[in-house]
Image (tube, rainbow, N blue to C red; front, side, top):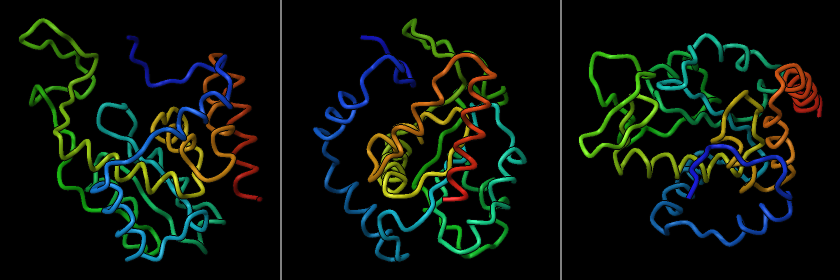
Length: 203
């Protein structure tokens, strides 16, 4: 078995979607997502979704500020999915249209006092490229957010495999958008991203 956060661009989109349709959510997790959506009036396809990944990604909060200034985000509700609730709250700055679930737990550092991007060596001989530990509760929180993000109009962000998976599970043509990020050449990626950004906010 090979683990990777990316879906290789050579794979057929129809094959990927056919597998995604076979997936079923844990009833308790699905119920929590649906309850949040009802409480906040989130109807499928009628709200934006933004994934703010921090911790072991190496991204800084300021890199996400531009998304809060987009003209089309002044009208519809925006769901925020994140692995750092406190930093995301600072970015939101009290704007009531930006909604976040309060997590039951969040990722934490396996080696306290060290950087998120330090390689972790486990006692059983396994290793992982980042200094992060996720509890069962944090993982379930992530799946709940994934369900909610899949029902949104996903705002394209660079290198978010979380958004990519939500796109494949989503309600519309988002899988095509997310698949374009897998081009390896940086200049191609930047051009594609610029086109997607333009289409998203002018559509």
